[in-house]
Length: 302
Image 1 (cartoon, rainbow, N blue to C red):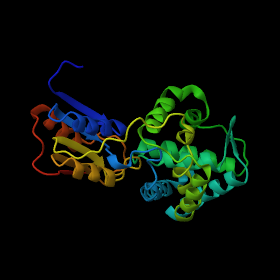
Image 2 (cartoon, rainbow, N blue to C red):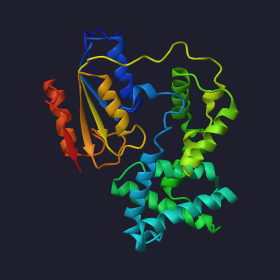
Image 3 (cartoon, rainbow, N blue to C red):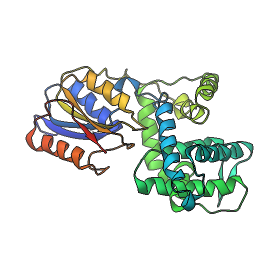
Image 4 (tube, rainbow, N blue to C red):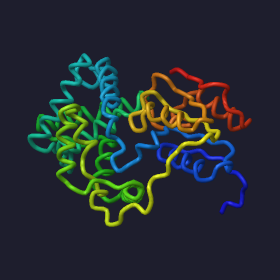
């Protein structure tokens, strides 16, 4: 359809999965292929974040340590444990009664999402913005009238109103169309309770029901099984909370002609040209320029 014998491809997250599918369906039709923040292709389904809870909990702990070192600025606790205790007080208050932040009501389901989403980067600007938002939530947990920070309001609007439907609706259609989801709400409730026992903050979130449980049409075909020797450069940060490093390693094993470029000690989703690491960007640029993969699986360190 493109009129080209071979294409070069750069994809992030689900886009990385699509690139892997292309290599499977059209062998020999790719040139340079970069799959950034690639998840395990066997785990793309309507609940793709089940199993990511330990990674997100570590990211939450890392953010808590960063924030504790800046207690004079944010007032959330002077130690990692003290900041985490603040987090749990916020969640407990939201479970008793929704937190009022400006015109928004934030219940225990939404507050868990805010923490999941907020700790997905270790860049100072992102951590600072999230700490300011948590400081607002902490006041709301004490039933003090507060307004959201711009970043917090952006997250709340993304979830609660239709302004971002152009993003969320196609994503739901893609996930629900890729693989069948359980239809019985009771199955989700059992999974939520099991998840809650293991991961109290994030287990209920990852196991929760989604529109896919009520999707009118079943998938037209089974997901493509990825297993080939196509040449590709897979890029992953070890602390990625969305498509985990473990998932990228799985993709690397399934694409036997690939190389895995690791950004070690970093929490990020979307690395090449996004995070700003000169080692990663230089390695990918060299591959794109020459078409030659690295000799082995290189590692860049923060």
